Length: 313
Image (cartoon, rainbow, N blue to C red; front, side):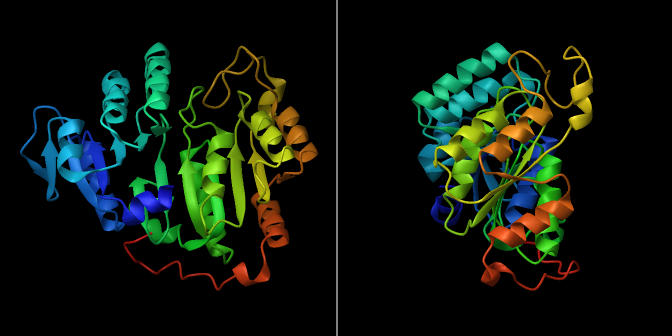
């Protein structure tokens, strides 16, 4: 889904393109090779950012460009309405950067998006990268060549920063990344961990999926059911961090989200994942060892030079 939308789709739409973050990351997305077809900022229609035309509404931008993907930099107080506007205009995939969106607004957004068949990634998402094709958002910052090269490992992470770090490790180990998705670290994400893994596993280049989990919530437990039931039939390697937090009171925050309230300890998540057949690593050294086990020998390639300063990821 994601690769096709970026490779053959009519282009990307950027909500909040005239903001400081929108301007900066639009430049990065253009440099990555993605076609940014339009920007949207109410009241700024008729202007341009880096040569990209700006419209007042998503509906106007879609009518002119046919865009099907949106990256949203709308501020927290406007982010929920921005996703609703995108879904109602026919956008198929929207990535949301903002966090601290009022939860009752966000629950309404997810319902509208589901009815409109719009996939939401985030909030609090760093974005998506398809190495060799381009980026949605800012994975890899202004030096994506340090972290990404095409390859067989799909990466799905609740942490944006760790998603890019794992991409760099995979690259330096001699493989590469098919699709990397930062799901967002907040409690109520548009695409939970299991759906993210299923999405990345669908990519034709993916041969194994690397998952980064965190304290709080039940997303990793839900993933175990999908693996055990055979809904995910590719090898899965997982890291779940935060074991130190298991000794703390549930009333204390540890990581992005509050614990308790139906969640599970990190040790419970690790045990359940192992019982389901997931290879659970306690370190990046073990991640590498597990990937060597599950990937065919022909997937290994010579590592690209860390000084290869191509602008495309």
